[in-house]
Length: 379
Ligand code: SF4
Image (cartoon, rainbow, N blue to C red; front, side, top):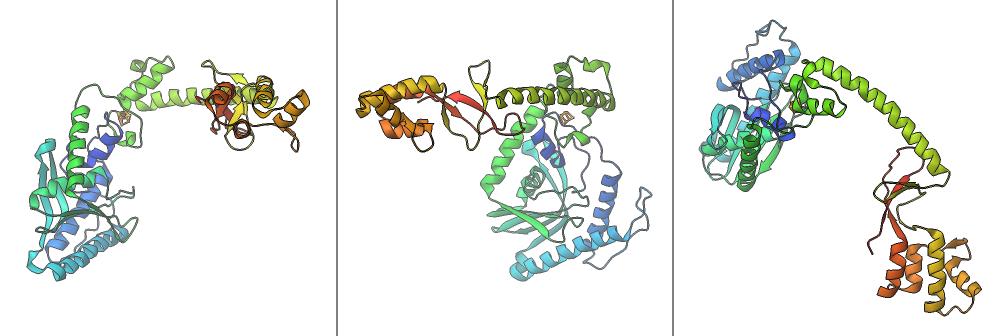
């Protein structure tokens, strides 16, 4: 987390906005304030040339500044030092090294505030580093990190763009991603569209893992729409807890109903029957892998027996039956085997294909054997 003035549209909010255009985060809580203080101490250490290791006993919030926090700051500052020494050895005076690098992205009409650490070697690379003090894993490919790179483009020309996360609560290694200039610009274009859409008043939203940080949670349009689906007037309920409690109660009832519907449907399917769907497809139980099956085996048998006579020279019913019914199994020819036997010429396919269901392997009922939804093969 770079030390960031609260900015509704700033980079730290971009991942949330990508998930839900309605997402709006409020001011950071206690953890964010403590994180900022840890950043401040780390920056002081780095700016002093790694000499000034002074830690408070308490955060400004009044919480204890424990040994764990101290170690996190030490691990981070030491990791930055190692990277600095490596780059310095390799690039000498060409290396530009900045701590708390101020940036903005005018193209996105946002101020990004500061990047924790920036390494820059002209015509080679821009490398932004972000110190994460929390435990929620953050990826160096996140929209937030790509945003920081966009902010750092003004450092100068380069051919490679690197973003690193250092998150000592999870790992003592930098997590690094590399981008090309085109990828950076593609991200900028996408965020332009996202921010433009998000700044409109009425935006579609989808509940996601960012809802917990979203200030709209209590009057979220997505929650309202869900409540309306079960005939609840969301305007009657103004706080998240009550709407969630109502939804949870309904969800539990709906789960019970769904469970018993599935059981009843499954009992019918297990008795060997098919369940017609309104659009003409059917549910049925199939053992084994998804495949092609006869829609109506009786009807298929008539057509196959006729084909045995007209296409394969069977002169009696017995001869035709011997071709259509596999002697070893015994089982009628499957659609695939029928096509092998009678060929795939157009006239044959015109007769066979309308008799075939294509079945897929979705576990529609989620119980027992696979319940298959079937659809007519197109030919
Ligand atoms: S609470 Fe609503 S508006 Fe906010 S992120 Fe979640 S779904 Fe989107």
